[in-house]
Length: 451
Image (spheres, rainbow, N blue to C red):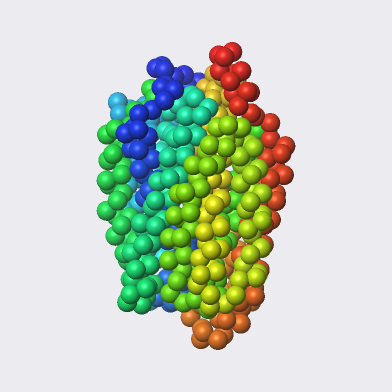
């Protein structure tokens, strides 16, 4: 990222962290996913049905927020790599980002009816700015904390479990509300907003208190280094493969998340069930993720990823055949999606941590912030195009979330095809990319032995 100088570790990193350290390192992922999932899944319905914005306007707001995030990711990675304080390189940025994220959460999750486009867009930018500071610094911290191949999978696996735990916990309240009182989307968003605002200080406090940060000399911050951060994906062949896979996965998830409420309610005639099905998917992820980690441990991450994407491609077409109004069948589909959900993120991020060490040996510089931010940049572009593109497409066809139920149901086939095609294209493409990726367990072991 913006690191054109050298960054050398001055202390050895532990090959294995203690469980309290791993849990503290993973804890913020609980809140970051709790922030992202409601924002991706529930915000289109919330801003159209409660606030009163058009679907196209909501797509534009999400695009602006994500674009701001994309532009800032590499800069933030460069700044965290170049920071030198008594409390570390990553900690100050996490601390600074928290107030922005808290204020932005309040203004977006509790937006009032009649709020205009400009104010919502401005608060979305502030919200993403705060979360960018937290997520990039936290991601770089996790990527550089251990030098062991399998320990990285353990670390990112724990983070993904925190993510998977957050989904049922964050949406369990809204699911209970929709099952018992028929609560509207505003009440559901409000409950999730309070959870974010309470959980953020607690989880970040645990991270800062319990997790060690590797001591590094700061990198030099130069304009050339910042520019290089945006081009990192084009200059690192192995990183380009992983980033391309991350792009397709991110775009697919953004598309699926942005239409999920509409798919469940309007295409499958299951109103007030969206949050409940998210709980099913997350619980299945908790059960299946250890299997994928075990497979990567016994083979390598590339092989495990090919397995993940193959299963994802097989599950993808199911929405085309789901019967309307059948709760049990859709619950089985949600469980099937959960078998691969999260595994792709865990393994791809773990590979990036391997690439950080590979790059450090080649360049004499530890650029974890640069790599993680460039990785996040790819994901941000995918999310911006996926979420906004899906909403713009539906808006262009005439779909309105606030229209009469029979008018919304007329778009059922379109919603089914979107839900099926996005993950299928992503899975097939990513499986092909992974067959061409060349970095195995033995490669990492040889490099460590040589170092």
